[in-house]
Image 1: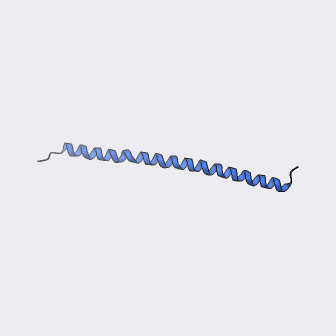
Image 2: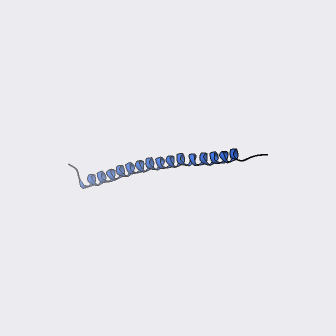
Image 3: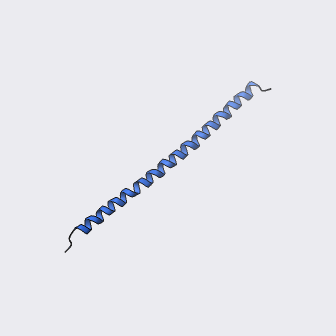
Length: 62
């Protein structure tokens, strides 16, 4: 038989487990968003460098 105190502890453990799962999910989503943002930022700089190089090639240097 379980007492009310045991049920209270079980509820506490259940909330702790749910909280831990939510924290892990938030961490995984956050890292994924961070990595995606980091990867998206790199091509923009490469495009800017390519545009600058194209402008240098098109200009006439004497």
